[in-house]
Amino acid sequence: MASFSAMLAMIFMLFYDTIYSNYLLSIGVSEDYIGYFFALGCGVYSFSAPLVGYLSKFIAKVYLT
Image (cartoon, rainbow, N blue to C red):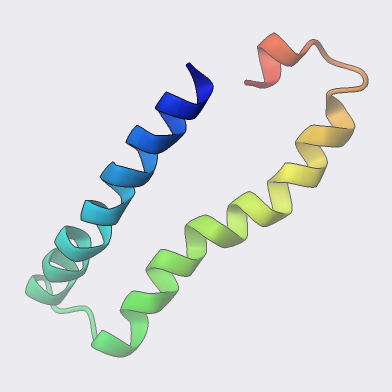
């Protein structure tokens, strides 16, 4: 079930890039800054993943999910 969920998430994320970039262009965001919007999610994930891994030693994983 987890692998199926991951596949669906990746399919939807592929559409997210094209639709969201067109939307950002339509509201006046410069093309130079659109990449930062996409990098923001990756950056938050890369900083929070080790923190969540550390906290999982002390807090039940159900609450962290």
